[in-house]
Length: 221
Ligand code: C5P
Image 1 (cartoon, helix red, strand yellow):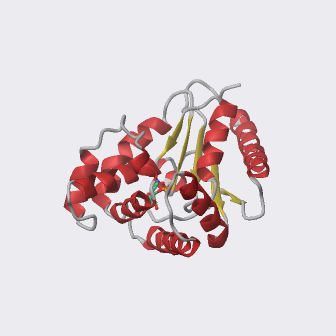
Image 2 (image 1 turned 90 degrees about the horizontal axis):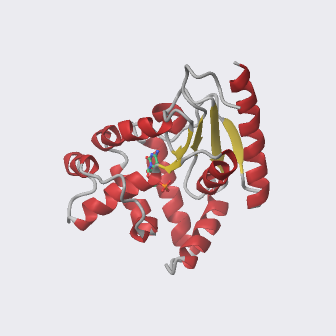
Image 3 (image 1 turned 45 degrees about the horizontal axis):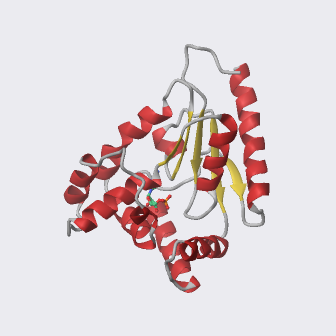
């Protein structure tokens, strides 16, 4: 079933900190619901990597803003975007309003596809698509997230100690949560999904229940 034709499609906004499981949940839901999915973290990662590759200063608003405006949004498949360094660079460029503004319209256009869409990030339910009928805020303790990210990085061939990955996570949480521009925060109408004690299948089930309930309400409204 779909909603009435005179309104936007069903948007699922998924936010939360690094390695909370939101990306896996977004991919799973996209398959189950047959909706397109956008991992918005990749946009910020691509900007950070572009600035670093050009020898630019990640903390300079105008340098990072220019890189964001020049970004090829169809070129987000590189493994270089999945590294630890890219995550750190992403969170440094993500504090700049010029960067966030440059990436906003593309994210909004994706969200407002007529058939609906799923986006995951930090500010989807608060800034990119505050109108989304379904919002999830996915979280877990920093220690749990560090263990998950550590295992992912090792599988990708990156060696880093668990302590270093935990430091990364804490630093990124603080930077993303404390910044002035679109800070990472749970939208008041977002369902909280804490995956600390859930394995991946239980997290998928919990997310699906939340989405199905929202979809039922949205279809009736
Ligand atoms: O989700 P991921 O870890 O790939 O995001 C990398 C960084 O990009 C985050 O730490 C955050 O600083 C930034 N980001 C953001 N807003 C989003 C998505 C990601 O600020 N919607």
